[in-house]
Image (cartoon, rainbow, N blue to C red; front, side, top):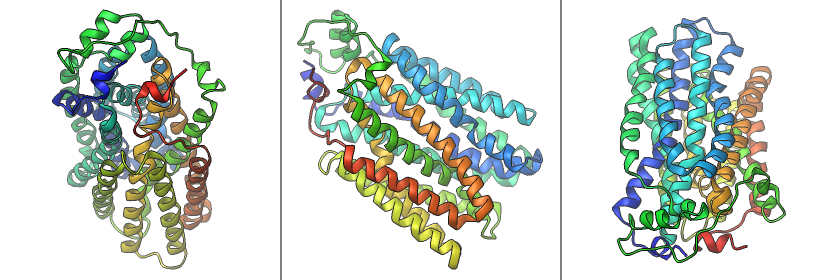
Length: 436
């Protein structure tokens, strides 16, 4: 049906689509990491309580809950490119407003709305990559979306470390710098074509053929146009319910753990008696080395398989967090904790941190693909909020060691659901994976 795409060689247009789509993941990584550094300045400047800090850290994630499922559904109805442009424009608007906020409540609101824009991009960007990717390169290209998160986090931690010495105004510059790549991406996204798969599913055969010719000048769709209605309820039909449960639990577990480490990482390290500058510096090192996991995943994802790498990743998360819990209790030495955080991040980025952008694309058909991605995004951010609030309470009441044990249990849940409900999807076309 889409042989010209599925059997295509890797071309510049594939790389351009992947880069511009992965930018949303990059900006999410930047946004989450930069607030974890900025909070070191904001807490004393605005005299924030522990509760206010937690709400501020979670505000963007809360916004993503609404942006994910609602905009994912809208993307399946209105088209990929329609949302692809608007979500980035809204990101720019609320990123700027966050940087010029004059009090805590303004900042909380603007970052909440910023999260809606990020959640929207999560719902659409992997879908565009998947629907344009050659079959044998699809896993690699989708892996870049996951890798981009950590590149964004690394850049944020680095920028935060450089800007912290500027004092009370430093957090404003941290937020504003994130606007620069967003503006560039918005301008470049204008030339990305609409997905031919979406066009065909909405009865637009002629436009689908035109879009196909962006890949190959002689290409055409080898199927009649149809109209497939999008229903959120289809995610829970008998055919897809196992996939929906798998993605929900898998992504909930991943986000509940990784967002805790991303948001609280610098503060956890600072609790070991080091300065805010040093804590931010160590977090930068952790994020930089985590990219090793992404590189390994990109190299292996289409041969070792999605499920195997996901299981290995979750297992690595369980082991490293368990050892960290023991160290916090009996031998809290900063260098060993940092090394364990590095191995933890390599593990999650090798496995579930990459495959969370792949499974929703391959387990669902075109008419509900972005809806599924958006639903997974929403569930994951519910998990993230659960993780950061629960960890704040547990670690505050019982210490970091018990907090780490909590994260071990959540990681183990992700491993178990992958073992029993995970499905291998490598080496097949999207249509083959979703035959009626």
